Amino acid sequence: MACRFSELVVNSRDPEALAAFWAAVLDYRVLGREEDGSVEIGPAEGFGGAAPTLVFGPVADPTPGRRRLHIDVNPTDRDQDAELQRLLDLGAVPADVGQTGEEGWHVLADPEGNEFCLLRSRLDPL
Image 1 (cartoon, helix red, strand yellow):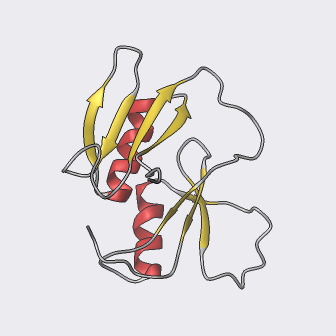
Image 2 (spheres, rainbow, N blue to C red; image 1 turned 45 degrees about the horizontal axis):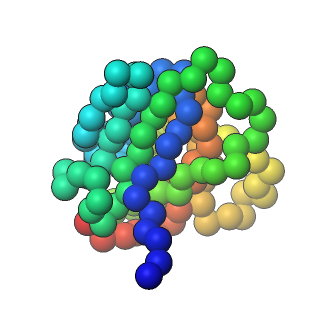
């Protein structure tokens, strides 16, 4: 038996705001809020479905420096250029991690500076 990726926990200065950003990016919804201020978002079917959930936990000062993990996203209902514009309109900003400009993806940062990549391939929505 193997393990299955079920959720990703992200340290955050403002869990509510970051959860709202990622919910809009991924077409997720808020699944729950904890007393400690954590916010979990995920697909409509909730935790344990085909797609993982994201949990944004409050921390006063997330670890500085380069992140060890990042999220990759793929457009589902539009091409990469149109999705890039949508993400920028939501508050993402271009991030420079040393790319050459020849890559088939865009490196962006969310409102708290967490890097993520917009890949080119279009995936079927779940």
